[in-house]
Length: 183
Length: 281
Image 1 (tube, each protein chain N blue to C red):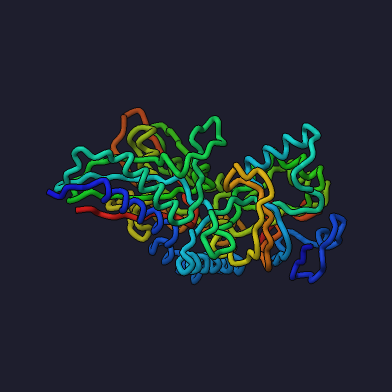
Image 2 (tube, rainbow over the protein chains, first blue to last red; image 1 turned 60 degrees about the vertical axis):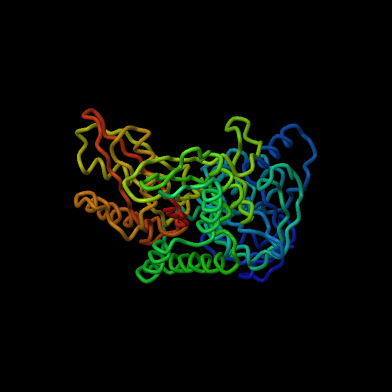
């Protein structure tokens, strides 16, 4: 379950109205579960989808965080865990959105193709503060490995976050914060 | 003449790996503090404060500033008055890196083979630059370079007749291309002159100089200042969301070059510019 502090509305399904109400530039605090996946995990997921194989976790209605955390020191929940550059995931994003992926968290720009796909699938692209991995680690409640463990930092983890600070980068109408006029 | 042992190297490199990844460089911290004061954009100020808070948390919790603990770049500057005969310096440095990255629970971001990708090789081999200097002792420096910004590196081979405007434009275009993607506000390490490979090496080395210190050459210092001013008019800002804090510092290292050439390498660093240095003498 996901909650956005801004709305204080529970987000349950991909059809939930909260996502469609978010606008590029909105600041939100995300509470709930998200999945980490970056380059190699994307490559594998995209390949599995192409083969028509069953995915190790259901993407429907989920949020993927482009993140490869540092190792967890003893007594801590997670290491440093900021976002990585989203653009590298652009060419592998289409099949994931087609499988029902609802949100992505990363940093920087997306391609024009991905912007269009976000609009088509009514998804949302969020920005997290790049290079603030220590700061963001304090908003993580728990971490569970999900799949591709052999990828080390690039494995998929289910991460439970509380009040994770994000800015809407591309909203479900396809408005891109980096392309619209700035206030 | 001090005899340097392998243990000296291993222990020093290990400590520098931890120090650089956990503690924000004082010059960068000072630049961020100044930027918070000068920045008019509210959102930009908020992000800059997050970055300062991030440095505080990293320090107190002993966790890395950024999850990308980089590809460790090690500079070895061999000066006078030290005896390094019989040392297997390269393995000692790599052992030091492994020890530091292991102790600090830093991320293993190194693949052994660039084509096969998936094989994790355990933090090493790192990149080592050996140099000779006139200073006393052996200087070891670790710069863990994150790859979000390393990917934005630009090597530009201008004609020798390039105008100052063309030179500036080519450097600024590297910042524009990096845009919001590589964790602005940036620090620019710029190598000018030498050969293509040497300009690249200089650009990395330039990042080691404190960003509040200008080049010792007047005309180069002036170019640094002008580039800083120009880059901060781009309105890229922290996270790329606007503001006048796009670049925190510009460091140029220049070297003589060929009459037919004008190599310029721009090595962009994210705001988490990390390095630490020690002198064994």
